[in-house]
Image 1: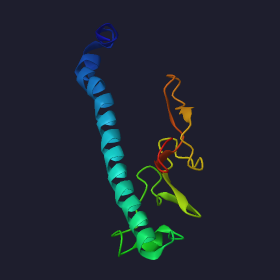
Image 2: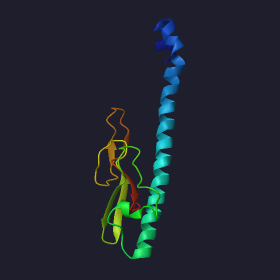
Image 3: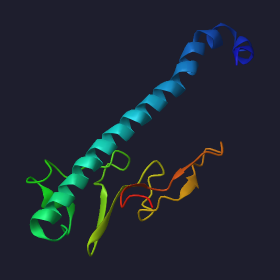
Image 4: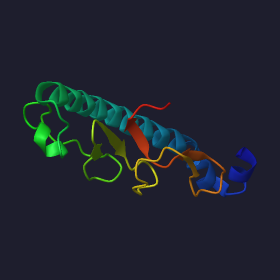
Length: 132
């Protein structure tokens, strides 16, 4: 890494620290986003389950949880829209579209991230149902 910076002259050396730190800041931002989403999803999941205990059925939509079970409808940090919720009889799905910003219907299958680095992540971040 340092050899390529030497060839960039004084400007390359001046910005070496910035180019070294930026990936770490990006990763820290990602971790904060994940922690926020996990907290929101846990609060929402608790609200859904409590609603079902109280009323004997799942809510048709997340809006039915406010304000008695959750303060506000949770916003997906990735899409800027609400978390995805699909009730199905006695069970339901609660998920985020995740890093690929596409609604894959609550699929947690691994997909390539498109960076060409060979990393794979889940299509969606599924909070419920729990994995088998």
